[in-house]
Length: 168
View: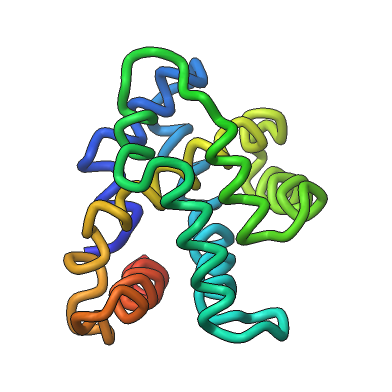
């Protein structure tokens, strides 16, 4: 099962739709278009993609996830009150490196999908939190099964990332 489907079944997509004031179908389309960039960014961060070593990259990603509350990130998105997005923006900063990249992702997805760029910018930190929270709660085992998940945290995260992309 892919990550997008897991997030939909967890209620994260419906929660984001409600928070953003859009139809669930719009939120599903936006999430589906944004997920590949988030997952690819997490993959690059986890493997030290940008020239750093893998442990440093994984440490930065893990620090952003755990510093933001780990599995509690998903609960923040699912809660009926507005989601504090600072943690999501921290995760985006870790996986993309700068706000300019996040803005570029939103702009490119808007151009491809026809969705409002402002909506996509608001959704990015929420989606990053939902993905990170889901993975921190052990969702990587289910998503990445058979894709190198193994028993190690790095293998589980990478398995979830690969599984999330290939299952789309």
